[in-house]
Length: 442
Image (cartoon, rainbow, N blue to C red; front, top):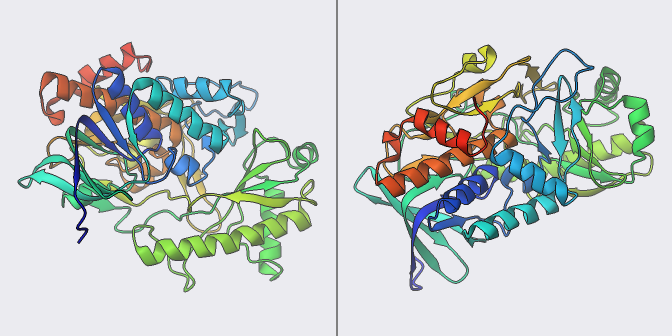
């Protein structure tokens, strides 16, 4: 038991988690004139995009089989605001090919600074280096806030509406509210993403092309070297991105399993620990392979890894609605759709990740995916939305998380200002509010 005195803080909207969804939610709610507090466990925002080093803003552009087609942006709102701001600071590349679509590569330091600037301008109270340890509830249903651990001592934060943007539905689990883990407990592989410096980018791109998904020749080389025992390279199909920094590649290539071969779930402390250790080992092995075999990488060296492994999937809320795998494939639209997505189903499991494209179309994610089936005064935002296993393999990416936060920030503001339960908000009305705020859903 921590015997230090508890400090107490009252706020209108409490956001736990400072990833893309949490930042967008906090800024949006604060812009509506509310007192907003954002709690983040690290000393910076960014979540999986920064701490996990995913390094890209995926989900902005439509996919097509026409390789000559220019990028067609279909996601706007807060995502577009963030893209414009970070671009103006030199922290984002232009659109780069990713299979049948495009993505953009960001500088993780500039991402942090961009988030800080948005939060500061909106007047959000930020509590860095703080971890939620307890959920305050009035009875079995009504969420009242959280207790967080800080170096100063426990901080009790009471909010009229609380937003779980933890990525792992931590608050949902603390409240024993309905949730589920992946596909009957099976989740996508975590990965250790790293940055490689000293690369001759011109020679590299002349040899392997501009597509950030490496060509079959590289896949075949990895398989051959792995099978010959020259290197331990468990994933053959890899993504390599030129970044905003000269001579640097962002490397998304590891496939992390436990030392005994088991699939890892970062919710479990042993699995999370094993993932970090194995991820660093694989990082060195892939870097050695690149240096020995890939054109332009002869003098390359590892510059950095993520602060932690990149986590694709863990625990998700059981919402009043659930995004189905079939919704993604069919490009389903909803009257209460609050975010659009053109991103493919991108399942990371085994030696070759599976990518299933949605061409020349988008699907929408309904508001109910962020409203817990039980629990009042609580919303979720980010990859812990209510979605089936393959659906979340598409819906989890950065541009969409910005969109979720934009929507849920507005929903929280409506709930506080109109003194209504978040679940009573009509998603069609919320969609109208988002369109007025630049989302361009219609």
